[in-house]
Image (cartoon, rainbow, N blue to C red):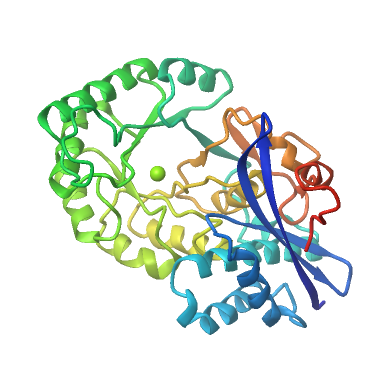
Length: 377
Ligand SMILES: [Mg+2]
């Protein structure tokens, strides 16, 4: 089996006629008629060109050699983003397409090729930003979700004195802690609760918040400080009973090695469709497992990549929960076609269908394009 062609599709999904989500898909074709589809997340306008440039290296290769295809391109991109960033994110889209192809070519779901599954369903947690927490928690619970996340950072907190320094004033701290306790009260004691700070605080402020929230029994407090300084994150993790989670902006095993070896966090959250793909994230989860660190991937992608993430989450023992950002998105399930409901009772259901197990709904995606604009280019 040989790769013959690669095409990309960029689709802006409109909700109530307003462009709301932009998705980046890549398709790899072969000489045997089988194709695979992937999705790259958190890329920019140069993504299409980067993907096509990388793809030239894949022509004539056997797509079932997924890791060798990936690593060949990655090494050739060392000076162009092969260590972290947009280059890796574009390459990740190709990697997911290779896995879809490899699964279809062998007639098995991807998780089988990753060593098999530990579970048939993959638990999702609802990312709720700053919505009405009581209402949202009740709605999530009624749909079978057992975990939820809210944002606590607020750049416009009226008690903030300076938009650029990342300290907290006493009143700001007090209002945030009060809000966090209100969230826990609204959510109830039985649901897993995470709180996100988006790395918007300095080391002292992040420490104060982590200590003040100890009695909330959080699933985690996310990025109390920015993620680049691993020692600063580790200082907070070691000083508090609040579990600390980070990693949504780290790339590859190499980007997670120091975080894991220093036990700088209690939980890691790589973004699978951005930071290296399915193989790489399974390896990151395995590294974390040796420190008894759970794996709770970040996810802000479309349904296609969410299903891709679920194959990895099913294949590792230390999986905790996968993020779900699209709780109120009416278009979420329109993007794909599948023989079953992908989300059932707050979990992604895995099947025996080969590859990812779902296909893009091209008829729907085409309705989002200008007239006569081809989906695949
Ligand atoms: Mg986050």
